[in-house]
Length: 444
Image (cartoon, rainbow, N blue to C red; front, side, top):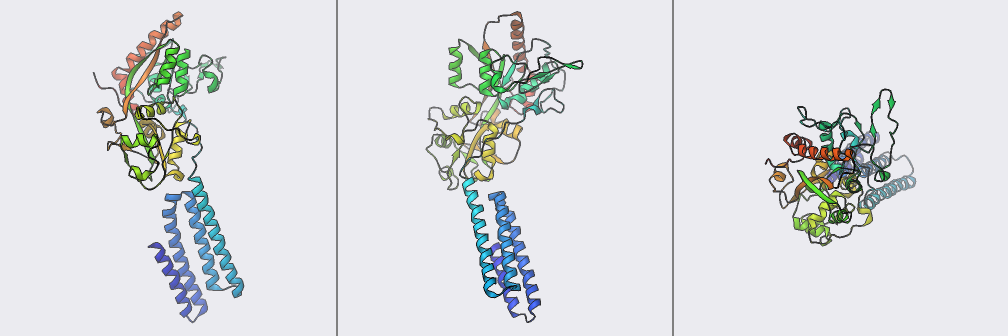
């Protein structure tokens, strides 16, 4: 409709110009009409095209509108001889077509490849005693205070805000670096052993901070190697269970709350619900087009995470006995934020499908670029998670390894581990579970 109005305005401008006897007046009037028509076209283009093409839509609108204005000016004011003028009109039109084709072609190519993974969320914002921390606090003093022989904690990215709030309530105040360095001021001198270690070598030496977040797979290795006493995870894969068994370690998984494993698409995708069967068929490779799952005729790009990551372990649990298809290397994201960015990017709005945990998307990302999908018509809300209505809701855990303490310090720390887990299951600990954004365990 808008294009009909623009074309009608341009035709009207030409007709008026032809019938007005005063050539200058006719050209001025025609120029005004052309300017109005092109301005309307620009407004409509900037309103609609960026919704589907992002910045490319803005460039496309500007190129078409500028070319239209230049052509109108050449035709109305006739500044050159007819042959030269016609050549210029043709040249402007060709340049506009080439630029538009280039912009559109770049967009089509960009939509065919996945975005490079981004960096993980800044966990420093959740450090327990950081000024302005996002970690939650109790309204009253904690019933548990551990002042020495502190249990060493590690875990999944999505659970760091929660166990950081546990530390805030129960540990002595200090600067616990989320990435593994403990900073404590001793008068005006820093403690001499403050070393900044890369994530790769953290697993090879004892952690200098009792509270870090090295992500699921690294945290699990830290637990096996004895560098962590408690790790907070969404669950364990069969492979991780086997690794512990081969080490002669018995793992104890203590449920401390409930969370939903969620699937999401770009907010522009028309799909709002998938059945559990559809999800299994998509990730097994049986369904490859959104039209087979209630959407438009577009290929599905189903992203994945590396094996033994928390979300990939959850996906394998969703698949059950259905084989999981291998994803192309460029569609496997090491960081959860990379998967989110790929799905959120307008280039992938027609195709992308990702997964995560509810709190990570709503609490840590907290952006409105993706849409959480209902599963079998049930949305992943707190009520549905607590009531077991949402099909992919499950417990998350404080995981410990049963090993014989070798020193008095290890005995005291092991006793504090038991006290900490008991406190996490208490009303105060469960209050922080809910305050952080998870679903607490049912009251016994």
